[in-house]
Image (cartoon, rainbow, N blue to C red; front, top):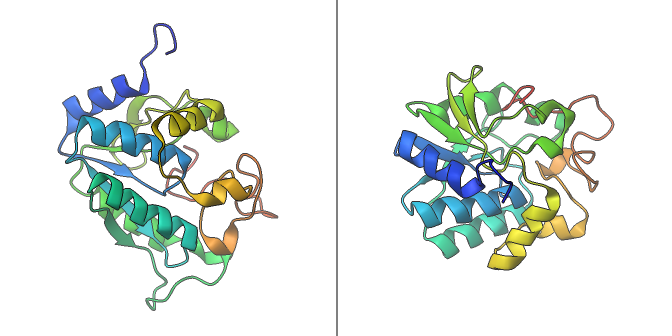
Length: 206
């Protein structure tokens, strides 16, 4: 697909060979995970998939979640990132918080590697992402099979394979997080609009 570089299928195959079953895909039910789920579960139907639930996900995100489980017969593991009193966050000042980091740490506990939908094209903070590289922050390997993919390639794969995708993408949301802090916008401009925030805290500076 890209000359001498690895395809996403190659990266997924390498990650599975090196790390499965101590490997899991972090899924936020955006377009990138739609593609990754298809590639990963075609290669290994028993691969682990997890999500972090803040309690304030869009209804459309939950609809995509159900569609994914139905299509692939996979049970998505859920790690809660609710507020300290157990209720959903009500505003963007709190939703990407210590609870979300703690939920990720719980999800990654015992794994040798995790897989994400990070792409270099998404943000300046992500231009040095490696297809498979050491994640110093979390102390394990991270696979990003779509690191070099473009937006056009993502949508081309979704169309070619007739994959379910988050309908918010069709409403102008290029990047989708939690409902209190996500607006329509291209790239990641709709995330934490009006603030200097660029990452949710799970990837740091990616």
